[in-house]
Length: 151
Image (cartoon, rainbow, N blue to C red; front, top):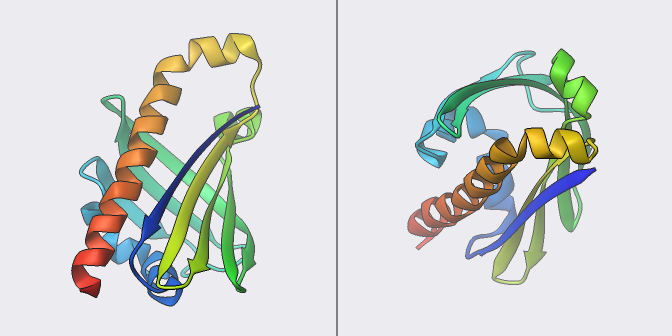
């Protein structure tokens, strides 16, 4: 299994960051220049709900349909989701966003995992590298967006 993980400290309250994530459909395009579309398919972002997104990775349009599988609202807020497409199910595509309060800042962590052996990881190495780059840029952009509005 390959797990990509990117964390960044953001000078904002965890409540503010969680609210931003709950309304990601309104902010999706400004979050990253490669983001095209985000739709709450079932109307919300709660356990069992489905969302759809389109974004460019490595110059190619990627369309994803995911179901939210877990939400925890405590000191460390967690949202977990799992891919629904045929390929995503084969690869075991899943991810999470975690928001942890650290006093005056919070730690935002994004993860994305794929269940694959060495052959598949070699075949998809370009996509995996593009995902790593994209996740890092998303973290930096989220920090910039929330800190600019927070100050």
